[in-house]
Image 1 (tube, rainbow, N blue to C red):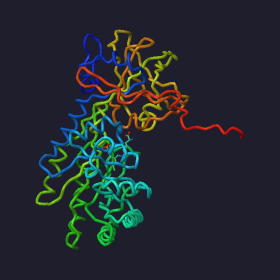
Image 2: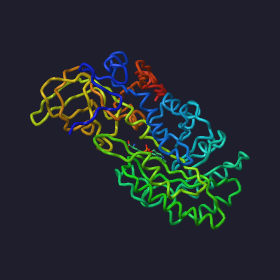
Image 3: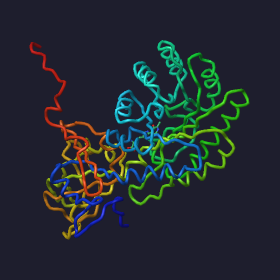
Image 4: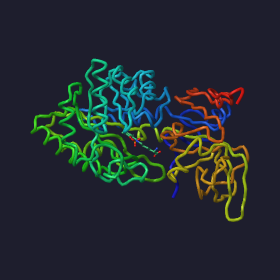
Length: 422
Ligand code: LLP
């Protein structure tokens, strides 16, 4: 089956372009490995998500963890998105990129006291609270600052999102949220604690979810809980449905935001509740490419290895989750077609970007792009093997600009100290 080209990409006279720029030009100037993002695609994805939910009171909060480059957060913030953050670092990034505090929610199972304080001081919309002890810690921190702390309780609905094990979060054996069977007293505690302002409920059941069914099931369980609470005098204003909608890496057909909105609309009718949505991957994954160059080719008899200059430290998803990312040559090759593993220079057999791919045998120095790398790509990168992290570039029509410099060798050792007499 032929894999479709990434959105905004086309071959023109055998050269791969993104929007109105030949990728070879960017790669020649900015070097490899290199992350390249399409501004138009990110905005399109955001618009599609936001408009999909147009019939329901809602606010889209970009899950910054998917790609936290300042330029991308700022782009989405200007388009109207808020931010879903999971650390003081992400709070810092979101505020710096211009996200209003009142459009920020703070998720995560392990918020530190200093992180709670920073978020209270910033005046965020709410904390998504994952345990009784966290709730108590937030109450104490709010008292110390003479503030009220807005919260939602994250409920674990025990629904299977039918996705990869490592990114399933809504089953009762996962570490996330408060089991739905034990949630009622926690909502009541939140309603009672003096400094806590209980605003809603939060769920996030997983990532790369392909159908609307697990969302509908989750929503039904949460609304039942909300009804019980209402009967007991506790009203929820917000329902945070989390993120998780999938994208196409190969030839999947994930549900669209519009379908999701349609499938949950009925259950929400006549309810005075504002939905919060935390998409990450959906907004940025297919707007990003990882460009790399071929260093060496090896024919080991049973197959070929194409050794490239990007590695698992730059894009960890294949090594971590055995994830599939399509690969395209910058020059539509006419060479003989081979089956190859595309691997990086890191000293581990798990260091590969793609396996068993049929492609025209590239020449040394030829450029390739790894597709759908905009989410959980750069952000999960490391300097493993002392490899400086790649630069990042944003394409806008026929222009492009560096939005993060390539790290230097000095960046690798910044902050390290050799004790002089030990
Ligand atoms: N909200 C919360 C509370 C989350 O934990 C996440 C993702 C999101 C929203 C955004 O989910 P998304 O819309 O991007 O699916 N590194 C993995 C994905 C980890 C997702 C973690 N949580 C991967 O590369 O597939």
